[in-house]
Image (cartoon, rainbow over all chains, first blue to last red; front, side):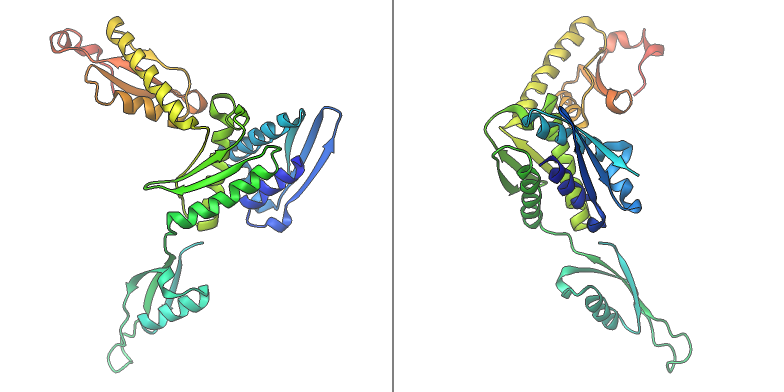
Length: 77
Length: 225
């Protein structure tokens, strides 16, 4: 669920949607969502001053609250 | 979608090439003629090619509204919450309203989550259409309620400023919120407003405007705009 959410958001932001990879490492309480995109798209998912990344984290936070979980979004270079 | 430039023998030829290249009918394109070109004298001396600049025409807000609704619905599908999105093309922006079960989940602290959604949808739409289209995401009438609260706050603060004759600052606020404060006090001649601070810490400071009599005495200390 959370993995798909991040994937959906990232794919709509980048120029190379087929190179978006998202994996979820599930913990007991906390999930870590790892987002990998093409190098030239890195700026697109981070945004000016990290604004896009922050927005994605906020939405991820809201979605995980609903599931009584915590989720951390990591953007992997 | 970017701007392209095409050089051909004549303007007509150039337009034809542009349509073929972009696979779009002429009506969808905004064409700017840079040089008309000339065939020169007997087609030998001074032959100049025609040059045009081609851009995609601005999409209508209706089209953008449909697309934005689709994008937002897709994102919300993965948030475990039953939601319906309504889209409306308004005069100067696209308005998206999320109908949900009334929990504040999608609003978040100080509207954080709502702002995040709005920002992301704007980014996705601007990527889709190649230009910025103003988008407002709302739920449970939050935007209108927030505006009312902020107007109320602005009025109270200005009263305080007038009484104390000292500047007072609001708490840190987003650009949208600050805008409402500025607009509310715009027509009040006895105070003036200015945004101060950097990034997330930007806030509105409300200054009293000194009346004519006192002005001379304090001239040297007047705040710069």
